[in-house]
Image 1 (cartoon, rainbow, N blue to C red):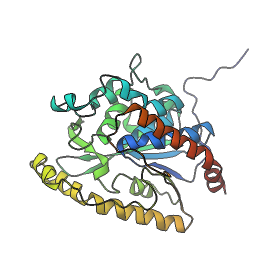
Image 2: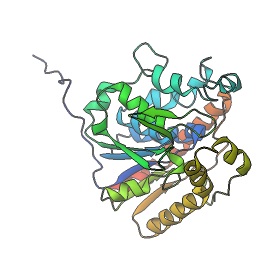
Image 3: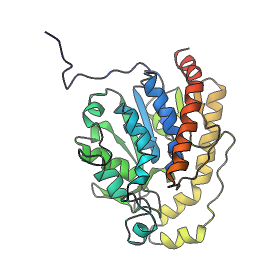
Length: 302
């Protein structure tokens, strides 16, 4: 008799001393989805993954080990007429229709079903960060907070609620916005450090040498969030927070404690919705990952 894998059997990891961190960056994640797919194709399974904003989507797709969904999330989904645009923005649903994208597409029968069973079976730890609009608290969600697919996708939505372009997410009495305006500026380094990690494999969505500048539309930010001064403060401080995190990562890299995966180029913005450009972005990231995966594995197992 053939033994079948029991539904509750755990999927084990083979990288246990290093935190995998996915940076956010909106649709720039189409490029880094190519890196994610290379990790999965080469069976590089970390037992800890942390992500913020678009990095949260990457994190859960990675833990469900779903190569196809990893790509489709940031490429194919833009072809869905319900995805968003200015019409939905002015209706108050967001330029990216987060309710649809995160809470309707993942269910069985949806446009982008999520393999929640495999996600649950994966023994790796998960961390996702979001920002509380009213208290200014940075909220970190864990796998223990997730009991069903609705919990998971509400958390991913909260972390990804891009200020101005997407409505906030209400979850457990809190009103949450994009975790990218919290500590780390969208890179979950602090979260992994707090969990005791000393080594970090960080997938970034900006080219090497990038430095974030102060916000260009400060007046719009102050006007839009005039009732939420803590959001305004966080958005104005984000560039400095982000740059400090990058400097810390570079120092860790020089000490051999971090491996930073930068895109060779970044051909699109965080709000790109053109399918052909996103598909080309993904292919560039996939090709770069395929070229460099031996370097990744040498560092991870060296």
